[in-house]
Image 1: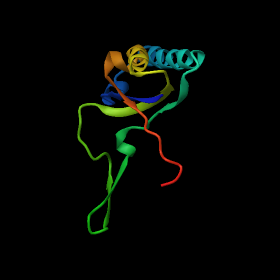
Image 2 (image 1 turned 90 degrees about the horizontal axis):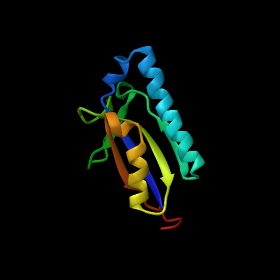
Image 3 (image 1 turned 180 degrees about the horizontal axis):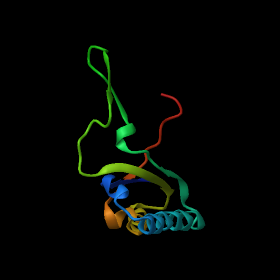
Image 4 (image 1 turned 60 degrees about the horizontal axis):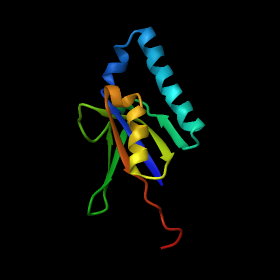
Length: 120
């Protein structure tokens, strides 16, 4: 079953890291991605640009489209990236999520990915 690990952290934290801390953190994420690949469970993943680059789109009940610069929600932690894995069950997904570097400085939300029917 496929699961998405949504990685949340305070994005302002990254700008405060020293070059050494930044390199060490980047290395930890690369090692984690390598471990997922070597385990044969990596489906995909990437980091996201800062929330300041976000655009939020909403269509109201009357069909009017509203476009807002930036994220819709004002939160203490922002979605900064994701991994998609294919593991047997939720217990395996949780075990892998606990190994993710984001779990030590933010939050990893684990959510199963539902199948989209080929035809409706």
